[in-house]
Amino acid sequence: MRLFAPMILRMGLKAGLDRNDAEDLLQDVLLVLARKLPEFEYDQSKSFRGWLCTVTLNKLRENARKRTLPAVQMAGSAWERVADQRASDLLDDQEYRQMIVLRALKLIQVDFAATTWRACWEHMVSGRTAKEVGQELGLSEGAVYAAKFRVLNRLRQELEGLLDL
Image 1 (cartoon, rainbow, N blue to C red):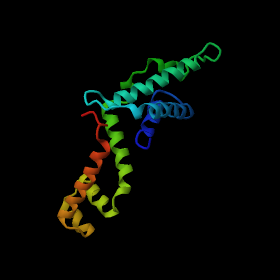
Image 2 (spheres, rainbow, N blue to C red):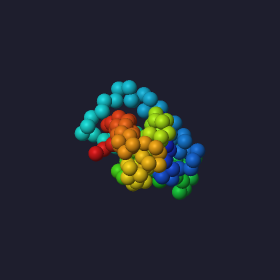
Image 3 (spheres, rainbow, N blue to C red):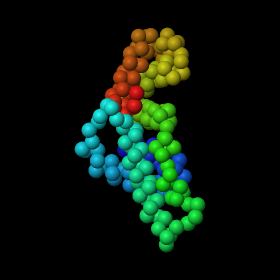
Image 4 (cartoon, rainbow, N blue to C red):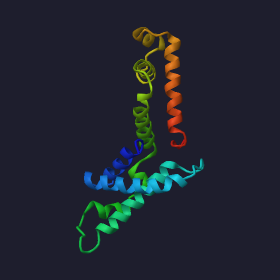
């Protein structure tokens, strides 16, 4: 939930739902995931993102059908438009990777000392040399590389099976 809830909410908003409807969609999808994930077996030949988008689209369409019954139908409503959504409309490969990696980084940051995290971030993301970062933080160049290795290793563990590479 911590990893995928923001992504599912974003898919609902991107589908044209208002915030309240997108939050309702999130709850519906999380209920499906809570029921299905215990029996879910990861298959490397299939995409987890694709499966998640399919679950989300199915809930979008189900909710659209419920809300567009003749008694409550409103022309031009977001619920009428979601029936034509495709997974690629909600979340493309690049957007998925970016969202999942940034969310995972945010979640694992608490697992590291502030100096370790900053050493990795400054070297990897800011593009500064290990020597330069080490001097600023009072670490050896090797310690900066070790920090980068530990953070990346933890990130790989967190994302195992979640990125369609």
